[in-house]
Picture 1: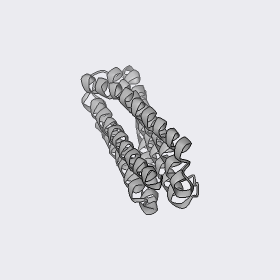
Picture 2: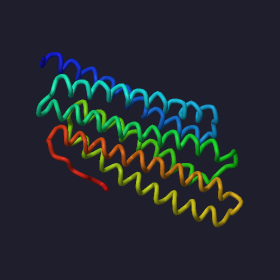
Picture 3: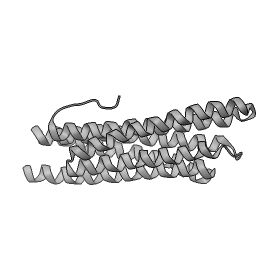
Picture 4: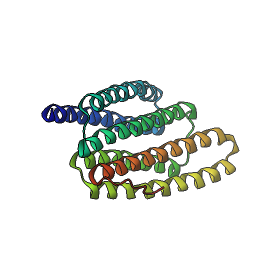
Length: 218
């Protein structure tokens, strides 16, 4: 039974990595769609949300079947529990990427201040790198990498505060662009939420390795 269980866990981890890679790519493409105002790309990101949902449900079914039939213990049980938690956070990230793509569709073609538009890609790169590092920490059972990744959330929060402050100033000075500025603030908020969910991934990795549940950067 042990060999079968560990084989199933390896397969589940591969599915988890595929789901994570898709979500990371969604985030990247959603930010790109916003920056270059690419409606077709934004719709692709929104369509991929359904793919992520299906992946989450498939992984969840396999995990629940494994729990029912194999009854894993100790470390193996924590691995299955962690997978279930991680796919939930990944699914929420995909939702936020879809929301970001929707904001890109609604912003219209008018340009926004370069400083503001520079912050959004930086937030996107940070959030994407957090997802990638969290999954790498999961595969290597690396608590140190998980903790390093979690600290990046402070950088994302700082950029979000900058976007919020500069966005409000821009809308005061340009009332005709309030709708556009509002969607930009929404976009920054979605990326800030992605980073929060990436922080959750790191916390689940730490739980899986140590058996201790810690809440960090909340």
